Amino acid sequence: MNIVPVVFEDHGLAGMRPLAWSTPVFEIRCGMFNTRERVDRVSPGGGGILLGRSFLSGLNRASGWVWGAEAFRKAKPDDRFLFLNGLLAPDFLLINDLFRLAEGGDPFVWRDQAGLVAALVDGRQATQLAADWTAWEEGCTASGLWHDPLRALPIWQADLPDCPPLAEDKLADLPGRQKGAPRFVWSIVTATARALAGDLDHALNHPPFRREPFGIFPLDEKGDWVWEGETRLRNLAEAMATDGVDPALADNRGRVYCGSNVSLAPDTALNTESGPIILDNGVTVMPHCYLEGPLYIGSGSLVKPGTRIHGETSLGIVNRVAGEIGESTFGDFANKQHEGFI
Image (tube, rainbow, N blue to C red; front, side, top):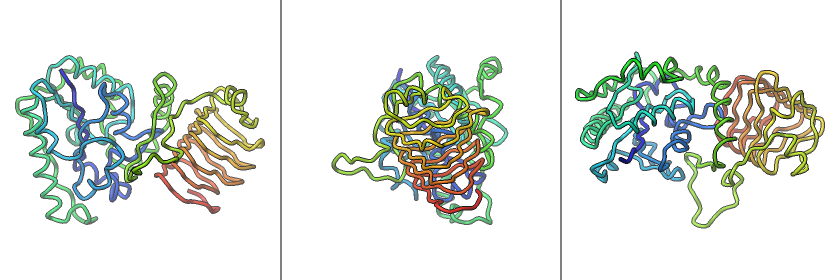
């Protein structure tokens, strides 16, 4: 039996605006990864199917995932489809347990108060569900709802009459069951500390990962972009010994983790009392900076002199930041090279 993950958007994306105006909810990062990346890392075969707003489909070039309901026509008789809400709680343990349940082969559906969270269905049910989702998305597109801030989105019911609800005893075993699918943009910040803890554990105990950022078109020939390289995290003490990373003022060097080619100014202050600090490949931290965990800084980012970054913050790839930042999530290629507070 082959399990194909299907990550979808639904009416809950309205709660993720303004981030979701131009980005699928499954591409919004919380911690080190977004939902698509976490599912990709857990899925035995990697990749899967994305059900997202049609006007964003042209930006899905680098992920390697298939976009749209047409993919179900190529399903094999023994395929099973694990539908996962793009707003799924940012928790590797939860995603792992959903795949574990799916491996049992018994169909199930899990809903929270807002809608569908996850479902395991066969090819016939998956085709039916995808057709229903497509009709819902096309209706929203025709009505101009994706670009209208004053009109509510219709609820996608995700009707699965032949699929039994997830049993209470199995639901009780899911570590992230109470979180379900976060439905509002501010929930990203409150989930960051837990997400980073799980992301770090996964990154340290699994093969290295590569970035496949949404909206980036791959070159015909292999480029030399910093985010394309494999990330292998080591703690600061090891990085200092092997890569010559400059010593820094750190309360616990064992809770600071670096990818390759990280540059830390000697007087950087690192505070890991509340959580780890993770610096991905090619991060440069210039003099007189203060970094506080839990914190993730994405590949190729530049932290300019005198920057203060407080915990529960995630920065994307190739960010340029300065000033004071706290309890914030940045997208990729974000530019805040000035003083002021976010």
